[in-house]
Image (tube, rainbow, N blue to C red; front, side, top):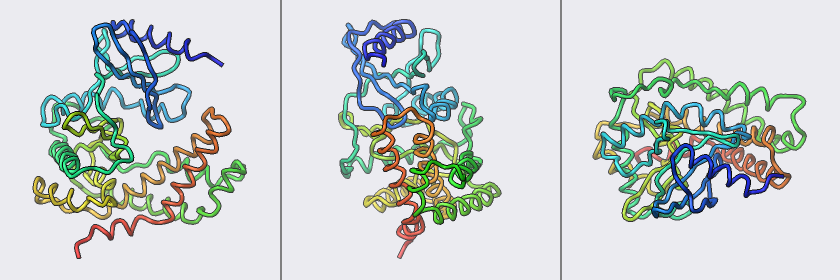
Length: 332
Protein backbone atom coordinates (compact mmCIF):
# COMPACT_ATOMS: atom_id res chain seq x y z
CA UNK A 1 0.00 0.00 0.00
CA UNK A 2 1.21 3.49 -0.84
CA UNK A 3 2.79 5.46 1.99
CA UNK A 4 1.31 8.73 3.20
CA UNK A 5 4.61 10.47 2.39
CA UNK A 6 4.22 9.73 -1.33
CA UNK A 7 0.70 11.12 -1.26
CA UNK A 8 1.90 14.30 0.49
CA UNK A 9 4.73 14.65 -2.04
CA UNK A 10 2.19 14.69 -4.85
CA UNK A 11 0.11 17.28 -2.97
CA UNK A 12 3.19 19.47 -2.56
CA UNK A 13 3.88 19.22 -6.28
CA UNK A 14 0.24 20.05 -7.06
CA UNK A 15 0.03 23.26 -5.00
CA UNK A 16 3.49 24.35 -6.17
CA UNK A 17 2.67 23.90 -9.85
CA UNK A 18 -0.91 25.17 -9.85
CA UNK A 19 -0.83 27.89 -7.16
CA UNK A 20 2.88 28.80 -6.94
CA UNK A 21 2.84 28.09 -3.21
CA UNK A 22 5.79 26.64 -1.33
CA UNK A 23 4.27 24.63 1.52
CA UNK A 24 6.12 24.40 4.80
CA UNK A 25 3.69 21.70 5.86
CA UNK A 26 0.61 19.87 4.62
CA UNK A 27 -1.45 18.22 7.34
CA UNK A 28 -4.55 16.09 7.04
CA UNK A 29 -7.67 17.62 8.60
CA UNK A 30 -11.07 16.17 9.38
CA UNK A 31 -12.97 16.14 6.09
CA UNK A 32 -16.55 15.36 5.23
CA UNK A 33 -17.94 12.00 4.16
CA UNK A 34 -17.44 12.94 0.50
CA UNK A 35 -14.00 14.56 0.53
CA UNK A 36 -10.59 14.78 2.19
CA UNK A 37 -9.16 17.97 3.67
CA UNK A 38 -5.66 19.36 4.25
CA UNK A 39 -4.22 22.39 6.02
CA UNK A 40 -1.31 24.04 4.23
CA UNK A 41 1.17 26.35 5.98
CA UNK A 42 3.48 28.61 3.93
CA UNK A 43 6.62 30.69 4.70
CA UNK A 44 4.58 33.91 4.45
CA UNK A 45 2.45 32.72 7.40
CA UNK A 46 -0.54 32.36 5.08
CA UNK A 47 -2.69 29.29 5.72
CA UNK A 48 -4.79 27.47 3.14
CA UNK A 49 -7.40 24.74 3.05
CA UNK A 50 -7.13 22.12 0.29
CA UNK A 51 -10.20 20.02 -0.46
CA UNK A 52 -9.84 16.74 -2.33
CA UNK A 53 -12.47 14.60 -4.01
CA UNK A 54 -10.86 11.18 -4.37
CA UNK A 55 -11.11 9.72 -7.86
CA UNK A 56 -11.50 6.21 -6.48
CA UNK A 57 -14.82 7.04 -4.80
CA UNK A 58 -18.10 6.32 -6.59
CA UNK A 59 -19.63 9.61 -5.39
CA UNK A 60 -16.91 11.84 -6.88
CA UNK A 61 -18.16 12.13 -10.50
CA UNK A 62 -21.56 13.34 -9.30
CA UNK A 63 -20.10 15.77 -6.75
CA UNK A 64 -17.59 17.30 -9.15
CA UNK A 65 -19.66 17.39 -12.35
CA UNK A 66 -21.04 20.86 -11.56
CA UNK A 67 -17.94 22.53 -10.08
CA UNK A 68 -17.44 24.86 -13.05
CA UNK A 69 -21.14 25.77 -12.95
CA UNK A 70 -21.77 26.51 -9.27
CA UNK A 71 -18.47 28.14 -8.25
CA UNK A 72 -19.04 31.25 -10.44
CA UNK A 73 -22.43 31.67 -8.73
CA UNK A 74 -20.86 31.58 -5.24
CA UNK A 75 -18.32 34.15 -6.42
CA UNK A 76 -21.12 36.37 -7.73
CA UNK A 77 -23.04 36.04 -4.46
CA UNK A 78 -19.90 36.86 -2.47
CA UNK A 79 -19.26 39.98 -4.57
CA UNK A 80 -22.80 41.29 -5.10
CA UNK A 81 -24.83 40.49 -1.98
CA UNK A 82 -24.58 40.75 1.79
CA UNK A 83 -23.18 37.20 1.84
CA UNK A 84 -19.63 38.56 1.47
CA UNK A 85 -17.42 36.92 4.09
CA UNK A 86 -20.15 34.44 5.03
CA UNK A 87 -19.50 31.90 2.27
CA UNK A 88 -16.12 30.50 1.13
CA UNK A 89 -14.99 30.91 -2.48
CA UNK A 90 -12.05 28.96 -3.96
CA UNK A 91 -8.83 30.56 -5.13
CA UNK A 92 -7.90 30.43 -8.80
CA UNK A 93 -4.95 28.48 -10.14
CA UNK A 94 -2.16 30.21 -12.07
CA UNK A 95 -4.06 29.41 -15.27
CA UNK A 96 -7.24 31.04 -13.96
CA UNK A 97 -9.15 27.85 -13.13
CA UNK A 98 -11.02 27.15 -9.89
CA UNK A 99 -10.18 23.43 -10.01
CA UNK A 100 -7.06 21.31 -10.53
CA UNK A 101 -6.35 17.59 -10.36
CA UNK A 102 -3.74 14.84 -10.21
CA UNK A 103 -3.86 11.04 -10.28
CA UNK A 104 -5.43 10.94 -6.80
CA UNK A 105 -8.21 13.45 -6.96
CA UNK A 106 -9.84 16.71 -7.93
CA UNK A 107 -8.92 19.73 -5.79
CA UNK A 108 -10.17 23.12 -4.62
CA UNK A 109 -8.00 25.56 -2.64
CA UNK A 110 -9.42 28.08 -0.16
CA UNK A 111 -8.09 30.58 2.30
CA UNK A 112 -8.15 28.82 5.66
CA UNK A 113 -11.12 29.62 7.88
CA UNK A 114 -9.83 30.03 11.42
CA UNK A 115 -12.67 28.81 13.57
CA UNK A 116 -14.51 25.67 14.53
CA UNK A 117 -17.21 23.53 12.98
CA UNK A 118 -20.55 23.66 14.78
CA UNK A 119 -20.97 19.88 14.39
CA UNK A 120 -22.71 18.38 17.39
CA UNK A 121 -22.95 21.66 19.33
CA UNK A 122 -26.28 23.44 19.62
CA UNK A 123 -26.62 26.76 17.81
CA UNK A 124 -26.71 29.83 20.03
CA UNK A 125 -29.43 32.44 19.55
CA UNK A 126 -26.93 34.67 17.73
CA UNK A 127 -25.96 31.82 15.42
CA UNK A 128 -29.62 31.06 14.69
CA UNK A 129 -30.15 34.70 13.75
CA UNK A 130 -27.03 34.72 11.55
CA UNK A 131 -28.07 31.49 9.81
CA UNK A 132 -31.50 33.00 9.16
CA UNK A 133 -29.92 36.14 7.75
CA UNK A 134 -27.64 34.11 5.45
CA UNK A 135 -30.49 32.02 4.04
CA UNK A 136 -32.88 34.95 3.76
CA UNK A 137 -30.23 36.90 1.83
CA UNK A 138 -29.46 33.90 -0.39
CA UNK A 139 -33.16 33.47 -1.14
CA UNK A 140 -33.44 37.05 -2.40
CA UNK A 141 -31.39 36.03 -5.45
CA UNK A 142 -33.20 34.40 -8.35
CA UNK A 143 -32.53 33.71 -12.01
CA UNK A 144 -31.89 37.37 -12.82
CA UNK A 145 -28.23 37.29 -11.72
CA UNK A 146 -25.56 37.75 -14.39
CA UNK A 147 -24.15 34.20 -14.06
CA UNK A 148 -25.73 31.42 -16.18
CA UNK A 149 -27.95 29.02 -14.24
CA UNK A 150 -27.64 26.28 -16.86
CA UNK A 151 -27.60 22.81 -15.28
CA UNK A 152 -28.22 24.40 -11.86
CA UNK A 153 -32.00 24.82 -12.14
CA UNK A 154 -34.37 22.44 -10.36
CA UNK A 155 -36.40 20.28 -12.74
CA UNK A 156 -37.62 17.79 -10.08
CA UNK A 157 -35.98 14.92 -11.95
CA UNK A 158 -34.54 12.32 -9.55
CA UNK A 159 -31.60 10.75 -11.43
CA UNK A 160 -30.81 8.02 -8.90
CA UNK A 161 -34.37 6.71 -8.53
CA UNK A 162 -34.31 4.03 -11.24
CA UNK A 163 -30.91 2.75 -10.10
CA UNK A 164 -32.11 2.60 -6.47
CA UNK A 165 -35.31 0.82 -7.46
CA UNK A 166 -33.55 -1.74 -9.65
CA UNK A 167 -30.72 -2.39 -7.19
CA UNK A 168 -33.00 -2.96 -4.22
CA UNK A 169 -35.24 -5.28 -6.27
CA UNK A 170 -32.34 -7.25 -7.80
CA UNK A 171 -32.34 -11.00 -7.18
CA UNK A 172 -28.54 -11.11 -7.01
CA UNK A 173 -28.30 -8.41 -4.34
CA UNK A 174 -25.51 -8.92 -1.80
CA UNK A 175 -26.84 -11.14 1.05
CA UNK A 176 -25.63 -8.66 3.70
CA UNK A 177 -27.37 -5.80 1.94
CA UNK A 178 -30.52 -7.86 1.37
CA UNK A 179 -30.65 -8.72 5.07
CA UNK A 180 -30.16 -5.07 6.08
CA UNK A 181 -32.98 -3.70 3.92
CA UNK A 182 -35.47 -6.54 4.47
CA UNK A 183 -37.32 -4.93 7.44
CA UNK A 184 -37.64 -1.68 5.47
CA UNK A 185 -38.33 -2.95 1.96
CA UNK A 186 -42.04 -2.13 1.84
CA UNK A 187 -41.66 1.40 3.20
CA UNK A 188 -38.69 1.97 0.89
CA UNK A 189 -40.66 1.12 -2.24
CA UNK A 190 -43.66 3.10 -0.96
CA UNK A 191 -41.49 6.22 -0.65
CA UNK A 192 -39.96 5.65 -4.08
CA UNK A 193 -43.49 5.59 -5.50
CA UNK A 194 -44.51 8.74 -3.59
CA UNK A 195 -41.38 10.54 -4.79
CA UNK A 196 -42.12 9.59 -8.40
CA UNK A 197 -45.62 11.05 -8.07
CA UNK A 198 -44.37 14.27 -6.43
CA UNK A 199 -41.65 14.62 -9.06
CA UNK A 200 -44.21 14.60 -11.88
CA UNK A 201 -46.63 16.88 -10.03
CA UNK A 202 -44.05 19.54 -9.10
CA UNK A 203 -42.51 19.54 -12.58
CA UNK A 204 -45.89 20.71 -13.86
CA UNK A 205 -46.16 23.61 -11.42
CA UNK A 206 -44.65 27.09 -11.73
CA UNK A 207 -43.00 27.44 -8.32
CA UNK A 208 -40.83 30.51 -7.59
CA UNK A 209 -37.12 29.63 -7.75
CA UNK A 210 -34.33 31.10 -5.63
CA UNK A 211 -30.70 30.18 -5.08
CA UNK A 212 -30.49 27.45 -2.42
CA UNK A 213 -27.57 25.76 -0.66
CA UNK A 214 -29.46 22.41 -0.40
CA UNK A 215 -27.24 20.87 2.30
CA UNK A 216 -27.92 22.77 5.52
CA UNK A 217 -26.62 20.97 8.61
CA UNK A 218 -24.28 21.79 11.53
CA UNK A 219 -21.28 20.06 9.92
CA UNK A 220 -21.54 22.60 7.10
CA UNK A 221 -21.50 25.54 9.51
CA UNK A 222 -18.41 27.15 11.03
CA UNK A 223 -17.98 29.84 13.64
CA UNK A 224 -15.13 32.23 12.79
CA UNK A 225 -14.65 35.13 15.21
CA UNK A 226 -18.17 36.56 15.55
CA UNK A 227 -19.56 35.28 12.25
CA UNK A 228 -21.30 32.05 11.27
CA UNK A 229 -20.07 30.78 7.88
CA UNK A 230 -21.93 28.33 5.65
CA UNK A 231 -19.54 25.99 3.80
CA UNK A 232 -19.71 23.17 1.19
CA UNK A 233 -21.76 24.64 -1.64
CA UNK A 234 -21.61 21.67 -4.05
CA UNK A 235 -25.41 21.41 -4.06
CA UNK A 236 -26.07 25.07 -4.98
CA UNK A 237 -29.22 25.14 -7.08
CA UNK A 238 -31.94 27.47 -8.34
CA UNK A 239 -34.90 25.85 -6.60
CA UNK A 240 -37.95 26.40 -4.39
CA UNK A 241 -36.67 27.56 -0.98
CA UNK A 242 -38.11 24.40 0.59
CA UNK A 243 -34.90 22.80 -0.72
CA UNK A 244 -33.18 24.61 2.17
CA UNK A 245 -35.96 24.92 4.73
CA UNK A 246 -36.52 21.13 4.73
CA UNK A 247 -33.35 20.76 6.82
CA UNK A 248 -34.62 23.07 9.54
CA UNK A 249 -38.27 22.15 10.12
CA UNK A 250 -37.39 19.44 12.66
CA UNK A 251 -34.97 21.67 14.61
CA UNK A 252 -36.02 22.98 18.01
CA UNK A 253 -35.18 26.51 16.86
CA UNK A 254 -37.30 26.39 13.69
CA UNK A 255 -40.06 28.69 14.95
CA UNK A 256 -37.48 31.33 15.98
CA UNK A 257 -35.79 30.92 12.61
CA UNK A 258 -39.03 31.16 10.68
CA UNK A 259 -40.31 34.20 12.57
CA UNK A 260 -37.20 36.15 11.57
CA UNK A 261 -37.23 34.71 8.04
CA UNK A 262 -40.83 35.93 7.59
CA UNK A 263 -39.80 39.46 8.58
CA UNK A 264 -37.42 39.45 5.60
CA UNK A 265 -39.74 37.50 3.28
CA UNK A 266 -43.22 38.45 4.61
CA UNK A 267 -45.16 36.98 1.67
CA UNK A 268 -43.59 33.54 1.87
CA UNK A 269 -45.81 30.53 2.63
CA UNK A 270 -44.35 27.02 2.95
CA UNK A 271 -45.34 24.76 0.07
CA UNK A 272 -46.07 21.38 1.67
CA UNK A 273 -45.75 19.40 -1.56
CA UNK A 274 -42.30 20.82 -2.26
CA UNK A 275 -41.27 20.29 1.36
CA UNK A 276 -42.38 16.66 1.27
CA UNK A 277 -40.59 16.11 -2.06
CA UNK A 278 -37.28 17.40 -0.71
CA UNK A 279 -37.50 15.50 2.58
CA UNK A 280 -38.18 12.19 0.83
CA UNK A 281 -35.62 12.82 -1.90
CA UNK A 282 -32.90 13.59 0.63
CA UNK A 283 -33.57 10.39 2.59
CA UNK A 284 -33.64 8.25 -0.56
CA UNK A 285 -30.55 9.98 -1.92
CA UNK A 286 -28.62 9.22 1.28
CA UNK A 287 -29.84 5.61 1.14
CA UNK A 288 -28.58 5.36 -2.43
CA UNK A 289 -25.23 6.99 -1.54
CA UNK A 290 -24.55 4.45 1.22
CA UNK A 291 -25.74 1.61 -1.01
CA UNK A 292 -23.30 2.73 -3.73
CA UNK A 293 -20.48 3.00 -1.20
CA UNK A 294 -21.16 -0.49 0.11
CA UNK A 295 -21.37 -2.06 -3.35
CA UNK A 296 -18.74 -0.19 -5.32
CA UNK A 297 -16.20 1.69 -3.15
CA UNK A 298 -12.89 0.16 -2.09
CA UNK A 299 -13.55 -0.30 1.63
CA UNK A 300 -12.03 -2.34 4.42
CA UNK A 301 -14.31 -4.67 6.35
CA UNK A 302 -14.75 -2.20 9.26
CA UNK A 303 -15.53 0.55 6.73
CA UNK A 304 -18.14 -1.66 5.04
CA UNK A 305 -19.71 -2.38 8.41
CA UNK A 306 -19.83 1.34 9.18
CA UNK A 307 -21.44 2.08 5.82
CA UNK A 308 -24.06 -0.60 6.46
CA UNK A 309 -24.88 0.94 9.86
CA UNK A 310 -25.30 4.36 8.26
CA UNK A 311 -27.56 2.84 5.62
CA UNK A 312 -29.74 1.20 8.28
CA UNK A 313 -29.92 4.52 10.15
CA UNK A 314 -31.27 6.24 7.02
CA UNK A 315 -33.74 3.41 6.41
CA UNK A 316 -34.96 3.78 9.99
CA UNK A 317 -35.44 7.53 9.42
CA UNK A 318 -37.49 6.70 6.34
CA UNK A 319 -39.60 4.29 8.38
CA UNK A 320 -40.36 7.06 10.88
CA UNK A 321 -41.90 9.00 7.99
CA UNK A 322 -41.82 12.59 6.76
CA UNK A 323 -45.42 13.63 7.35
CA UNK A 324 -44.96 14.03 11.11
CA UNK A 325 -42.20 16.61 10.64
CA UNK A 326 -44.37 18.51 8.15
CA UNK A 327 -47.36 18.47 10.52
CA UNK A 328 -45.20 19.98 13.29
CA UNK A 329 -44.70 23.24 11.39
CA UNK A 330 -48.39 23.87 10.73
CA UNK A 331 -49.94 26.67 12.82
CA UNK A 332 -52.19 25.63 15.68
